[in-house]
Length: 174
Image 1 (cartoon, helix red, strand yellow):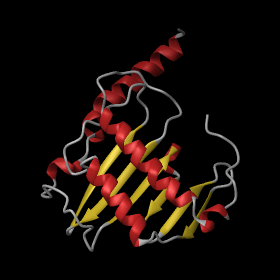
Image 2 (image 1 turned 90 degrees about the horizontal axis):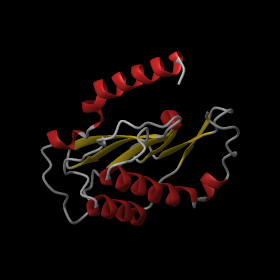
Image 3 (image 1 turned 90 degrees about the vertical axis):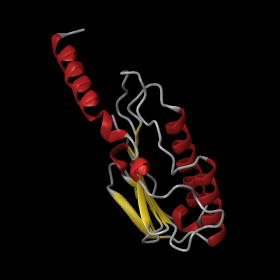
């Protein structure tokens, strides 16, 4: 390993160890103890995801943004149905999104480029935030559950005609 690579690795390790606490969820500070059985009237969420968090599904504004990589991004109006919101809510309830989460693994192994997810979930007058970093080689079980949740939501969005009409992404992240 060259001196430059070693230096970059040391800087990255210091940054990761210094930011570790920021990668935990804010659900710990939330006053929400458990999710009601029925979807609350004020239930909404947004999830930004991907490399540079260039994609977004936002039910607060009924929009979806697709990262087109080399060609910027495209945003459309897209509203999820009440049934789709019920399905997503039940998936969130199944993984108990309100409970404290272990989002930072014990390992220091890192990958680049990586995807990050940022969730903002609102219900019962409160908003909780979860930040998930895909930088780690061995994600925790909580991170895996959030990625599966995001993928489930994204499958719903990708099945919609409005989304299918968006231009394809071109290029790749290195």
